[in-house]
Length: 365
Image 1 (tube, rainbow, N blue to C red):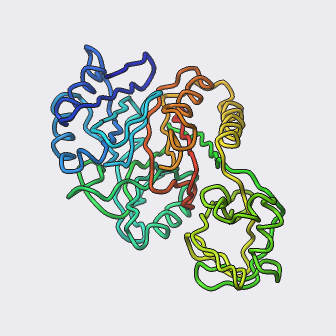
Image 2: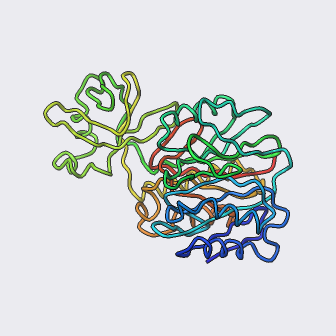
Image 3: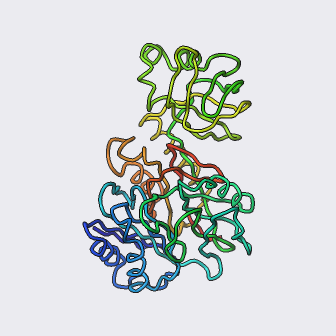
């Protein structure tokens, strides 16, 4: 299946057992002009085509006028109001940006890829790279905005940055002529006040405000959780604050004898944290509020197109039906051309998040 919309950018996608058939559906979805006038393209393919990324890119270069492609192999594809997981699927978004306002990049160490007046970056990160967080943070130091997601690690070369490549962080640098309007939705809501980590080792929280964290989570999460701590799994998380935003860390272990909690990443003493609840209703409400903020920031400007980076735990797993959050975004933004993927982590301004949806709208300056 392929879809085309009459906007600045065009989104097309296809699903089939063989990459060639899926790529042909994408090409057909561009219509008779096949991307005429486009100079940049975003390309995401699901893990079923992990060994075929080079062939897919060659096909698109030979059949469209687009030379600059960025993207990669992803855990799941979302295009317009559809989701594709555990199947072969390809999604593309092509359009025209001002000449000289963009270029692909690849950074495998502390970024030295910034050479001009770049203002923003759309990033595709390698979740296995030991310095991926440092790469994202250092890109953020020199840029006004940096957003994206962690792709899959399958395939001999699983990223696209002008050509097929692997490792580190890659994507598209943007300069004068293009702005990014970004919205972040957490899908969680706080269930109690902010606490300070007063004792921790690695990823184990031993004290919050001088008290066992298990005592605090029992008091804040309610009697149902306190009586059966197994109910906390996947429902109650730790939010680590960074300014006014927070990133979510899942609970992976409970030491009931000492009252300790283990989470999915290292926690440092002195950090501010809070417990948060994650459910479908909270996520949908937070998404709606994020879209209201984005519309206010757009201030009447006409979007060129949009990318959406969503956690692999969202989508059908959070909302119960496929395409719910994608449909909500497009309905709020006048059926904007929308392409994205389900990520192993979501990137926004130097931080890597979980359970998050990050909407990135390209607009002309």
